[in-house]
Structure formats: structure tokens, C-alpha cells
Length: 244
Image 1: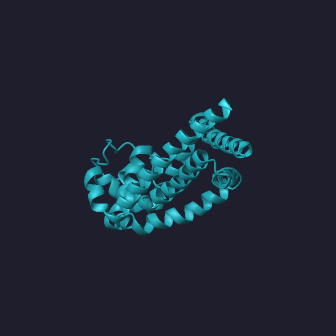
Image 2 (image 1 turned 120 degrees about the vertical axis):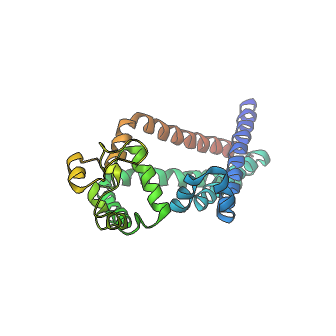
Image 3 (image 1 turned 90 degrees about the horizontal axis):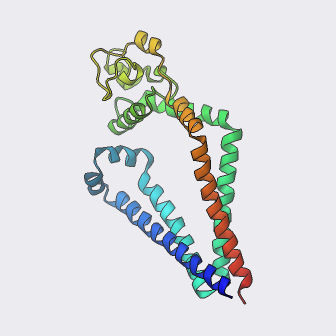
């Protein structure tokens, strides 16, 4: 009985924290979606790129709603010993866990297909928007500066882009590593000859390399999240099975 009471209390506290996180994410997501300008004033110009590039407001709302529902169901089910709420909590967590495992399997099995799809999508966007869309251009500049890379595949991604056309057939300075002084400015233009000679790695390849380099950390985080989800499912089933 003492073990049951302890697990019940821990279940309530754990899910109350999840509930609070969900409320916070929902609040920030709604704020970003409804009143973006005031959000951008606080967090600076870089947030403008991120918000518009990945629609982070909607992403936060979705994540917040899931955490809100999970936290409420877990906390309510444990506190009131409601078997229906505990079963719903278990099923939602199980669906999330299955989706994560399926996503990992698809990513491993269909990496080449995903790379081909992303190449078609991202390179097309670069050729159409880089140099003409301010936010899109700023996101790519930040990415290339942070990862020390050039384009999605290499410098050829920028051929026929608005930037390429407006700058007399030259490429972003990130594609010429010997010209870059750390802030995207350089004494000379990045010509095709320089870019070809430098052969700066594409951002996709660089990102994969960074993930492989930090595979232990990434795997540890993924395993930790999966372990927490499994533990939460086991605890919810324990409470469910021991309720009268």
C-alpha cells in the first residue's frame, strides 16, 4: 500500500510538471502566432527568421497541447484514481512512442530517399528565394556561418538564384572559406573559380557529420526520452491494474 501511495504521488508530481510545461508552451505559441511583433522585439531579429521559416508558433501550440493533455490526464487519473484517464494517458504515450520508433526506422532505412526529397525541396527554394526573401536569406546565412558550410549540397545550389543574378554571378562568401572573416564579409567576391577551389562542404553533409560525431550524445538523449516514456507507461499501467 505504501508503494502504491508513493508511486501515485510521484505520478501526480511528474505529470503536474508536464502540465505546467504544456501551459507554458501553449502560452508562448499563442503569443508568437497572435502578437509576433512584440515577441520579436524581445528576442531580437534572429527570432524573426526562425519564426517565419519554421512557423515555430504553430509548432509550440501543437507540442504544448500534447503536453497539456498528457499532464492533465496523468495528474487527474492518478489523483482521482480514474482508470479511464489513466488508460487514455497510456494510449497517448504509446502512440507517441510508436511514432518515434517508426520515425527512427524510416530515417535509418530511407536516408537516401529522404536526402533526395530534401535536395529537390531545399535547392529549389534556395534558387528561388535566396537573395530576394530577407528572412529566408538570413536563416541560411546563420546556418552556413554556424556550420561552416555552403548551400545544401555545395556552391552550385546558388546558381541562378536572385543573389547570384544580382551580384554578377558570384556566390555567398560562406562558399569561399578563405575569404570569410567570421561575419560574412570579405575583401573580394566569391567567384566560381574560388568556390570550386575551396569546395566548402554542403550543410546537409556537415549536419550529418556533426550528428555522427555526437552520435553517443544524440543516442543518449533519445534513449533517455524513450526510457522516461516507457517508465511513465509502466507506472500508469501499475496504477491502473491496482485500482479497484
